[in-house]
Length: 160
Image 1: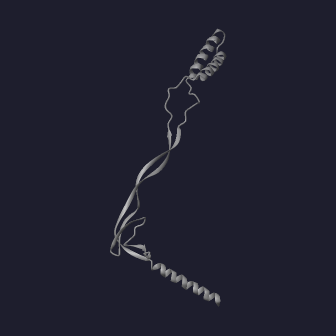
Image 2: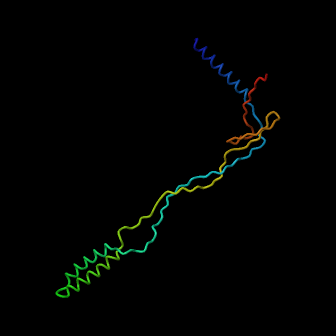
Image 3: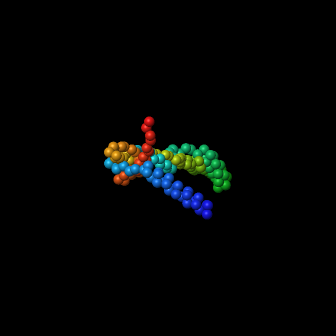
């Protein structure tokens, strides 16, 4: 029974404190609301790949040497007698020419990277509010639209 009385007492004291707090709240009439905008930079990331620049084909020295050897071996097997020397020479020249014109295996790859570009945008940052309380006009900044009235915390202090 003692605990029930204690709990009821605490509830009533809490309600009286809440009422006292509500007595410190007043409302002001909103006179004017002006939206405030600010410019912000918004980063946008994108992957960019640059195509390799076209380069004039260079002579493929390794291909020419290898082609000349293979052409000489093949020409040597085709010809007979004194024609074998001529066939070998023609094989070396033809193989070197074909090998020199083969593209090198080192091809350039595209160069890729992430690029950040900034887009300017206007965003609402809040509201400049003019309100009236007890015949006086006041200005304040609010992050939310106040509607037709603003809540005010009223504090009364003793002046000596």
